[in-house]
Length: 378
Ligand SMILES: *[C@@H]1O[C@H](CO)[C@@H](O)[C@H](O)[C@H]1NC(C)=O
Ligand SMILES: *[C@@H]1O[C@H](CO)[C@@H](O)[C@H](O)[C@H]1NC(C)=O
Image (cartoon, rainbow, N blue to C red):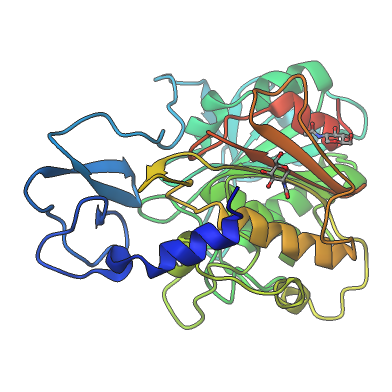
């Protein structure tokens, strides 16, 4: 079997990889956020949207795309209450079992909207999970499209659902500000809400976690990298390494195609340095991390997540294993009976696991119960 490295060096050599022409060739890219090349296809092929970031010329007339796109969410209007202007000063002032918008919770330069979900019964010194949505998503969409709130009713933890302030609702994971501890932007707003919850709602500071999908997965790596003092664990579903989207000097929330397409290949030491640079002088523990990524989507018979190429999985593995000082090869890499065929669970040490899902596109379905187990909540 070809290794991913081989496959991707091959992919990089494909003539259409950087094609900017009047019309894109069959299997070439023909659209997507950040795409500046041709948006029409040569005759005999049709431009098919795979996801917001990638449309592809496929042979023949329009047919259904191969990859799944951003998670499909049930149309629903969850109960949402808006606070009266100040953040709840104590747990008891948060209405239970509904999405409740909080404000004035500390430094929040981008005015990230943040909602809290408090279950009917809360553990004493409850854990806190920050759950970050994908591009085009919202706090409400991730709330209703995931089981994080539902499982809070079982396990008695609190959830914060932030909502991106940017058009297209991706998170800023590219600016210096967001990639720097207390540097500003989206990550500071989210960290402020978590700090507020610790200071005012009796949250256990040892059990504050981040989870997220796609852009929210990137944000999860950002929070884990830049705020290791706040976040003690993270679960990353289909994202990129910390700092992979970095585009210093460009507008916040910029799309980094080089990273997305898996072409930013660094050494573990280089990736780890990006994490260390985010918070110079920090010597405390690093959050435990669990990373999930899919490989599916047919692109010239090359299998990949075509929004955030699977090379990003291997780059993220290099990053966190180096941060933890773990060996670069897993201690074990096994299939799990509760997971579908094709999933492999590579364990590198107590604080890092990487699950690759063969045949699964962007994004890997959520396994919330499993995340809770990894985070020590379930
Ligand atoms: C784990 O093993 C599978 C094959 O069984 C492989 O595809 C995958 O790349 C391995 N995971 C890691 C992180 O090396
Ligand atoms: C991966 O394997 C480790 C070691 O057996 C196990 O503790 C962990 O729960 C597994 N992770 C997943 C996501 O199944």
